[in-house]
Image (cartoon, rainbow, N blue to C red; front, side):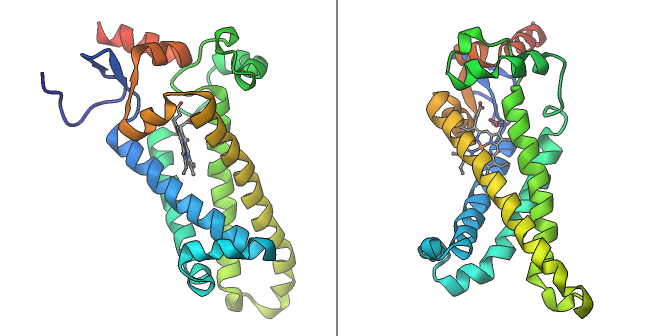
Length: 221
Ligand code: HEM
């Protein structure tokens, strides 16, 4: 049996699979991922001489310097795109509090002790909001650093504050990103397949996002 090309999130497929991410959500996620990685690596290269070699992801240190702010703008636009797709589902729900109170079981990978989660658990929501607000701070501070000559001379001292804010926001995203990769790839097998191909098994959905799965089942009746 052929399946339609455009599948809505939550569609139950005949082979015991569920659509976790639509094509648009996956495209948006990977544009975000690639642009973020580029900015992270080139940014780290400018941050410390020990990491200068990372600037070669941009071809050469000079091109990395030119591309970093441009790709940063693309990352920000991708983040806005993600926001239009997920802002409603990333909002807190009452069940999130119970999940947060038991977050240690998530960290210890003892999912069976966790309260049921919706499409996104409270940890994933926290990651999302950290990235969203950090992206705004990075854009605002980054634009000032990009065009310092447009700043009135008597305000140039502000750069001594803006540059560390930019670096601090970037470091926060790096910490969050490392946890995202660790949880998404190593701790929750099957998650990467979901964000790559859009589908997860019904068992995966019921195990990791039970409230979401129960809603899907109810809606499909
Ligand atoms: C480039 C490397 C990246 C990899 C390998 C990766 C991996 C993943 C995986 C495996 C999932 C699915 C988790 C699930 O459905 O339970 C996911 C979802 C997600 N990713 Fe990424 N990701 C990357 C970069 C990013 C970046 C830079 C952002 C920036 C905002 C991001 C934001 C999200 C969000 C908001 C979700 C949905 C909720 C969540 O799982 O946190 N990802 N990612």
